[in-house]
Length: 354
Image 1 (cartoon, helix red, strand yellow):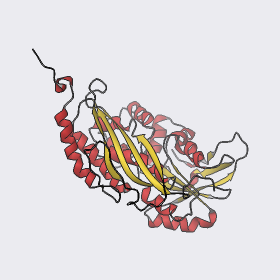
Image 2: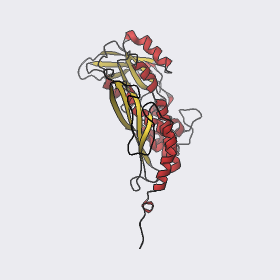
Image 3: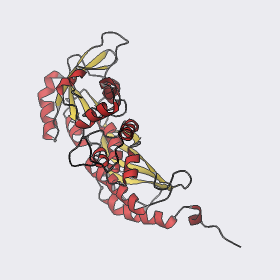
Image 4: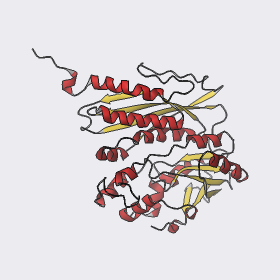
């Protein structure tokens, strides 16, 4: 009489255990006050008091990397997508003034490739180190039949904290406030269904030279990881000189900025204030994407928007510069002309030479 084994059904328990053992030193490298960053238990403990908080409010976020993963899979390059995963979560925490404390990941695949998974997990740990949060656990799911061989998906979960009464919620934004932009590293992790469509239409292979990035392949240029803005934005938040911050993700500039300003106000951005990076020029030109559509889909070179009172502008810029940023004045807060007007308008789009 034959005996069925789990491995025959496509799930390799030994490979899963080998991956857990490989991840343990990576997690340990992200240890921070409040966490031992150990793996293997059913749940992770975190001591918020040991992290230095007296009366904390917890803030939680979750996100993924999206179809940017298809490029990583097809190009067989997995060493940056984990940074993207962490960035998409912790950048959403810091805009509210929260310090990222710990991170968990969910990795799902059809057939576990331990080598590729180790590379992915190493990049998640790198993202956590950049953000200053502990990788405290996660889940690896091997699901034959759900994913094709070689395919995988990632999801991330971040928890941060802020002291009661210090949340940045945009309620103090006022007419005359200055809008600063913090440069992005490229496309970040949004709009890749459109990016991949444009690359396919242009008949470019992933290993072909990128027409928008010198000495890089198309895949390597597009896989440049999302910037993590935690340290600079936390430094600014602690000064009390910021009225609002917006992480520019799906929906681009015109959809994300209104999320953090009162409904009776409008942000006017001046496209002449910053140069449109080459990757967006190429996408617009090759894909025949209108400038207005660019601002609705992509970050267009601005990965984080910061709103500060005009009287605090000089010190805010100095704080950001000291933290390694190159802030750009890109707009102002004005009264909304009517109730149906958009919350964010990008003026002078024709100045972008495409």
